[in-house]
Length: 228
Image (cartoon, rainbow, N blue to C red; front, side):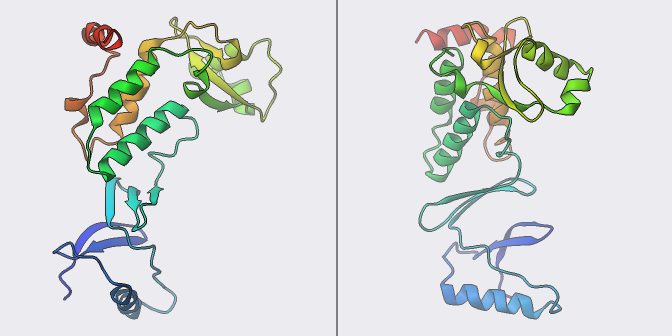
């Protein structure tokens, strides 16, 4: 009846816009929510989540919204990993912002973080380590991933419940941030940035824009980028 465009929907939410793209007034928003609730039993009540001039849908239950004041709201697990490196999260936020600002400066942002990934030092290592928790499962597991973590923890004073931070060495082992001596797997760090970009593959051509410098065929290009 209203001829609205359905932008996104999932288990318990719907997002619509006008076909012409014009904003909804507060009065229109109130009328819409009242009309929607009138179609459902009293036990089911819809509530407004806000009006957002800009919405980016990455995948089911993962989207980015910007309200009229420019505040950005992120929903979903794709961009909220507690284990991800600070630099990787920062990279994703920069990509989000350039999408919302419609500047689309993807390659320059990507190259900036690739260069930093190849220059991790004592000064910036906190941005490039992944956070882990010493759990009972970690202490008893024989899986390769957990074994590498236990090897890194050997001789330390960490106990169950403690948080610790790790980075990959070139030989595939892990080292605690506090034991970092400048040696690390640069290609692994580049790969982490590349994988962080994959989250946006539904809205930007990731494979066309970003070079996976982890691949052997692209390592000369990586050297050229670092030496620019």
